[in-house]
Amino acid sequence: MAITEIALLHLLPNASLEDPALRSKLANAKAVMEKFTGREFHFLRQTEDPTFLYIIGEWDSLDQHMNQFIPSAENQALLEDITPHFTVDWLVHIDAPHAELPIPKATNDHPNGSHIVSISRLFIQDGQADNFRAAWAEGKHVLEDFVTEGKVGFGFRIDVKEGERQEFFLWSPWKDEAQHHAFVKVDGFEEFVKATQYVTDPIFKHATVFTV
Image (spheres, rainbow, N blue to C red):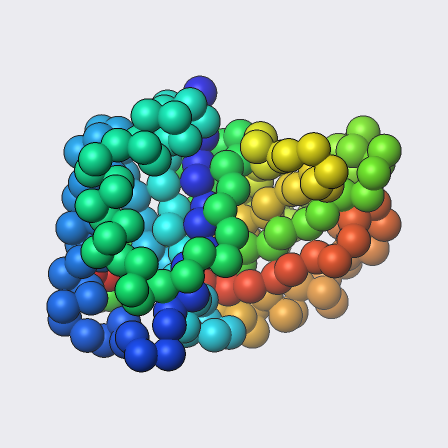
């Protein structure tokens, strides 16, 4: 099964995503990664802070990305091109292919995507992974029944290093942030949030399509 890369880039103060030259560099990076993998890559722009940009990639395996592509001449050229404009906040991989995630896509009518997506990053407490999985399995139907813009997607991080906590990523499609905020009032919300007793320091963000 293919895996998904989620990387969060932060725009440096002297750079602008409205700069045509930078957009051209990002378009080239997307083309290079897609040619290497034969798979689609996407850019999503965070709505809470538009200076953050997500790279959503798909790889055959962790080895293909980290041991084959990262050291490659193609990637080194991309890094030389992109590094003056961004820092990498974090990069992880989860055990879900793109087909299982509600990744928004641009259309002629909706250049920023037909919906927004919330990307929730949950850090699971030590020793609580099984309890979290059980509580999530029992309560996820509440969210699945509420969303209207597509299916809910999720995955566990597969590249956790020694000393790091396990992570769970939840992707939810929404008409807008107001619909997401309304979810807390739905019947059954208490059942849905039972899983959160096993997590710490959750991070909730929203993003839309960024077209290059």
